Image (cartoon, rainbow, N blue to C red; front, side, top):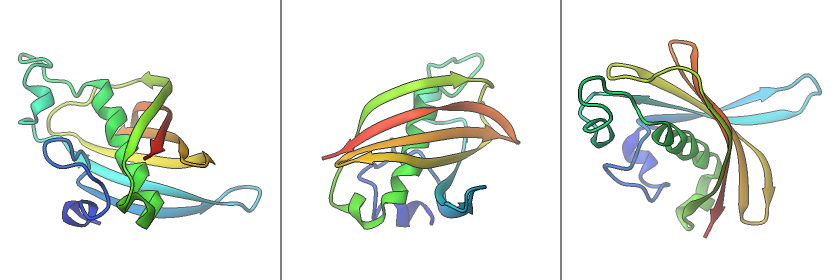
Length: 144
């Protein structure tokens, strides 16, 4: 799914639409359970608003932006449900930043829903560049 198709699901728009593409991947675990993943991408061009002051001499994608990218990718797993509701963060837990993301990097975002309690969604997510783990964490959001 490209940016134009993503816009039919997510309420985000430029400059806050932070995924270029997303696909759904289904994996069977060791117990035979099927797990759905959203696998998104974002190519850091270097002219993004969040790099203008972070940092002018050595631009690095802010961690909170990486978290937003992971959440946007995962929200796509909700399909048509996300078209009529807005996802709002309720928590960012156990997030760790392992590697810098810089202009020219293509980020691979992999997220899965781990739990759901009515309108609350719990997510496990990670972001990688060239196979190196940049960020991982547990996110939660509400659909309102």
